[in-house]
Length: 125
Image 1: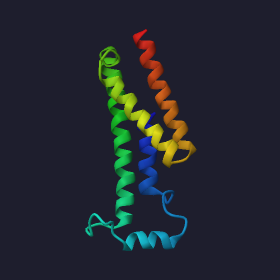
Image 2: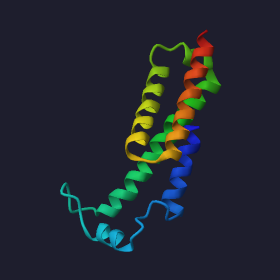
Image 3: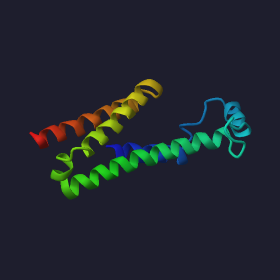
């Protein structure tokens, strides 16, 4: 689920205008202004880069969890650390979605987190 959500986010970042501001003037201002941190980038470049790196992070967590689950499910589910790290990352994404994003990623992340938690509980039970 995380791999799918991250992949969709990456496609929307580079192959659509879904993350563009509704007002063209806002994007123009973002392309002309730089953050206080550095003048080597624009706010727009940071915006696109942030979306892309966010996608890559979700894809990595999803692909890593999938690979571990397929290759050594028992070792993953009985690890003292890995399931907690995965659930922690998912929980953080749920927090971000609830606080800063909108309903679609929130629902997707809640489903993904619920599925991970359920599979972990059932595997350990």
